[in-house]
Amino acid sequence: MKIYLGTTSETKIAIIKEGIRDLEPYELVPVEVDSGITDQPLDEITTITGSLNRANRAVQGKDFDIGMGLEGGLIKINNLLHLICVVSIVDSSGNVFTGESGRLPLPKDVSDNVLKGEQFGSAIRDFQKNLGSDVPPEIYELIEELIARKKSFLEALQIALIKFRFKGKIF
Image (cartoon, rainbow, N blue to C red; front, side):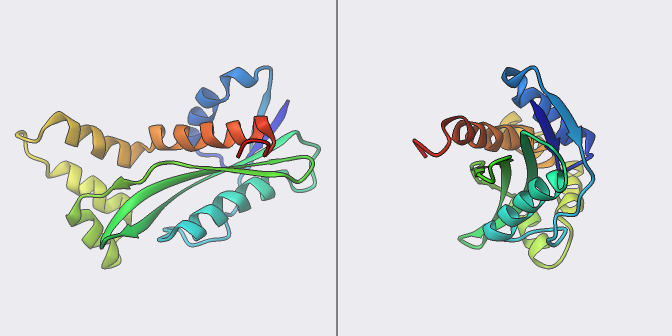
């Protein structure tokens, strides 16, 4: 199975490799593509669009089985930003299968700073640096996930793969 992935990010490639082990044998071909959206999507539709653009652009003009795109974004819920990760799969017949992660809340200070224009990556890393030693371990884990996004992307990938395997017969 030939899979084109719309990113050259080593982190995202590793996440995809972990999530598609059961598709072996496969050939994964990372492709540098433009998402066609803003660098910091702040709504669900834009995030989904970026993921889909990456999947479609990765396979343009190629013989392929699957194209995949990943996009992380932020959505506002009750005046607080939340992380969302999206994975889109396109197959050679033109079918699209999209999976979304659950929404992870950002710390209020990080959310406020991003809403004022700061980049999320900088805001969350600054927040992490300033965490005190009295913070419970689950807070550290949440902050790590907001930075790495591994579990969130894997969750979105698994949903997209389920939809792909069942070709829309269930979802």
